[in-house]
Image 1 (cartoon, helix red, strand yellow):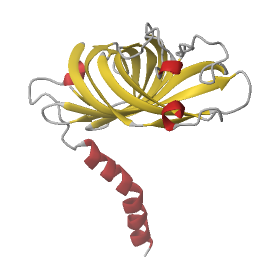
Image 2: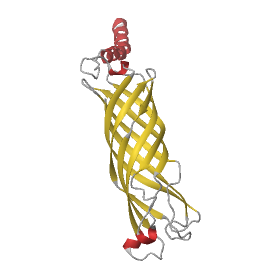
Image 3: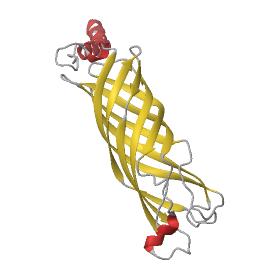
Image 4: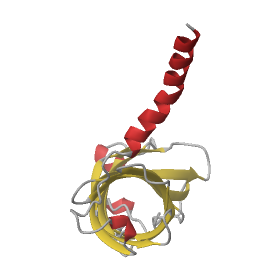
Length: 238
């Protein structure tokens, strides 16, 4: 009986180590179809497709009628250039184009008609992030990471130089926007390529609003700053 108890104890204590060994022996993909492991290369390239949703953060001079923002789902596409620093750090450039739409509703009671109250803000950004990717140790065919850095966005639809303002139905933004970005993701190593889903927050640093000519405008007169906030869902292929 004592021997049976000892054998049972040995079995239960050794079971986790046996399972861990089986996991460790799982076949690991090199993500390049047999042409050498992708993580051993100093420079790698790829592309990404993704979705975005952009919002605005408004700050006001006085607490009064706030601007209501209704964001829509947008689309991102771009390329990836990756420089391996060591096994846990990578520097990345991800230039791309982002398409976004936001619908603004101004709540001032003097605005009676829908055309006066509502503005559709369509933005096309040339977006260039410089990011630092910090990864964990690879576990078989996956490797989690966090990512962050700074980015510059050039808004091709800003209307900054348009002489018309909201009195003529034109909502204007600055052309150049500077941001910081933070995100998480996971590298999934497939046989022919590395697939990386990631979720990222993008936050503007500078004020993006171009104010109306009238300093007392019901649209822009009470706004002290307007800054974009975005959430990106990216799918990267390397």
